[in-house]
Image 1: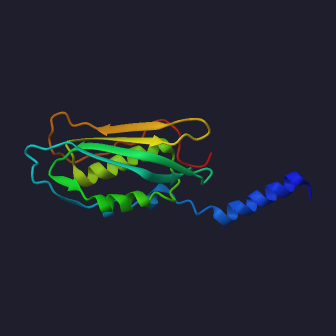
Image 2: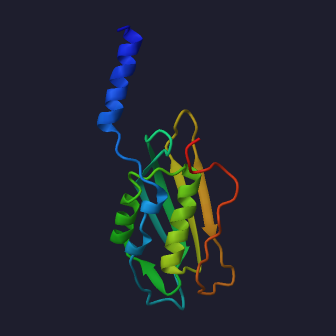
Image 3: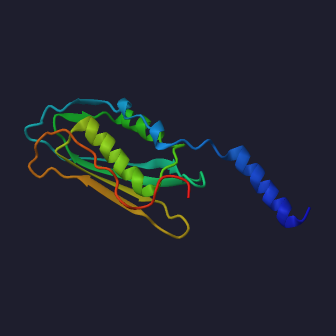
Length: 163
């Protein structure tokens, strides 16, 4: 066996040994996001949450994408219980989803659970292949009304399936 074929064979063995099963976005369960009443809803304060422990996987290669999530929101009647949010984010660990779609999905799930007056989510990925990606999405509600969030279908961009 030539050195090149031997190396390719060894890489294939490593892929089988170390790559976890890649799940689809349907594996994410937002029902675990817990909220609790906000006692100062009449005069809300802006809430910021940040974690540098977010990871999902590329739907095509199965390799991890690491990022920092920053959330800013003006609460409506509820606040996010942080441990439940941590578990929710862990659910992405083996989910194959493109970087640009993750932020919108998390925003939709959070707004569905919280009904905030407004929310902004920034997902700042570690560079991959020399490219640095930052995705920013928001749910503005300029009137500040506490209404139910209705996610919009994604438009354009890269697809989530195999090429």
